[in-house]
Length: 342
Image (cartoon, rainbow, N blue to C red; front, side):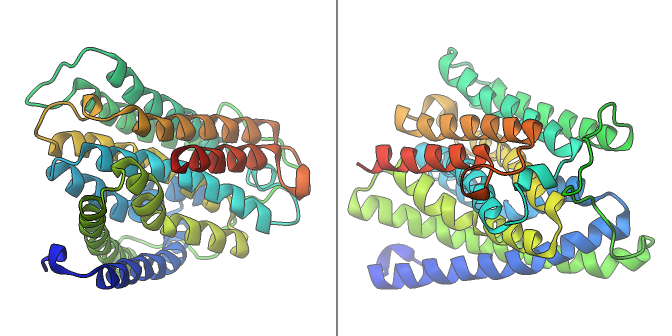
């Protein structure tokens, strides 16, 4: 399909349809991920952080990589880091609907703490690349390979933290632990459920491609800021699965899955930058972006730090019966929108 020949109305219709596909798949994939966590015995926090996080991030991955292939460095970068900021804000919204106690208090889990710290490290690496001299290997920054290596090492260490923890959260009356609802099954019994999971991922990937093409056309046709379109248009829409899966998990009482899905999805989203740098053929992606793109990197980094503080403090209730971290994250996110939009 040639998106450039479509009118604005048709572009918006296709954009909304792609968003609906992502939304629908996000609803279904949460239940599938929870069943996989029970059947494999890996737990909600780990499955939420790795498998569910990667699956719900697929449409965003497609947007960033496709944009980088077309030479749109700002759109590619801002989509990745803008998605991280938006998804962290979604966790604050989930805290608002869980009225019993602060979500971060009830979902205490060491795996989520570890992945949050890992995310802070991964988000600092693009900033190091941006402020360092431009050095590339086959037009790819060495920092992109470093991000991938740190992510893989973090995945391995995350499983070790779960299997042999050296720290444990204090249990309280409001703490909700991971209670499997299904018996563990062998590999043959899990084939069908993994097939469904993969099918949903593919649909989300196709929808992500449609969104990337529409965003590119709108940016060029109407002279909009690629940073603004990436952070507030493509990033938010492709992050809808995280919103849906988080709210659905909270309503089902799978609180560790909700928090782990956001943190793990954000951690996986840092790999957008590695893939985008590989796809961007005009040099280092980090040296092709502008200061407008960096604000969303700073927001994602700051919001993650606030979330980590909330997970450590575990306040039972704060302003409006939500934690101080949720208030701080929402103020930070909407403040950044106001600054970039006006």
